[in-house]
Length: 332
Image (cartoon, rainbow, N blue to C red; front, top):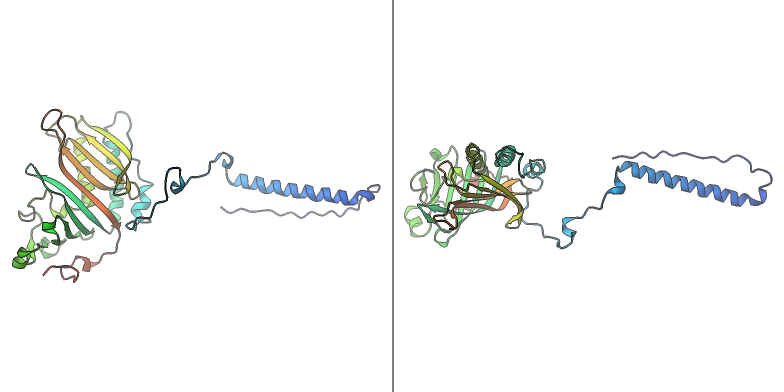
């Protein structure tokens, strides 16, 4: 805000009155002091007028200097702090309980509807995906993959980090290329024997020990899926929703949305689900869901969980990042 200071010149041109000549020095000293006092009051009033309510404001406390908190080192993966996703987060609907007489899932659905547009504006991102799934009643081990994902056209590069048996496997998919098939290679003797193969993303080989095809990977697809499930669930009752602030995933501050269906019904896909929404980026970075306990008093059984760690937005990926001829990849 710009401020204008009006300057006035004062002139004391009148001759001193008779009878006061012996005290002329004292008289002018008083005049000067009065002028300085008036000018000081004017500046003070101008400053107060420029900041309405300033007298009642409390000094802001930076999180890094708040009591009990230490200055934190900036995460190396915080590259998109000025991205559209981060800027839009502050304007997004707040994740909190809804209005009386509306379905408990409606606040979450409103947030998801508003966030989908911002998610679609993200060009690409990289992350480490940690996932665990129950297949055929058996809970499999954790898998860790480094991924690059581009939204237009949908392009995915995946490098397996763990477990050790699959470390080094790579998968690459670009929508509209290779007859919409994905390229993949394994490791060890199998890689020596078969090399790079072309597979249908939803075919039996690619879907072995997988709940979803590669084409449904990513934060955007996860959000779309959650919207679809939520739109079905609001048709029915028996739903409890809670919000937990301050949850952390790999140091990232999140809001946790917990959804519970107390009674098993054919209409519901899970007993309990948790969605962790990154507060800065306004993106879901973790999802986990559980089946109903097998016996009374038992613990819910994990169905699936997916966590996107070290998320880096808008890296400027090019076609070379999704090319099997990239010299940094091991396709052959």
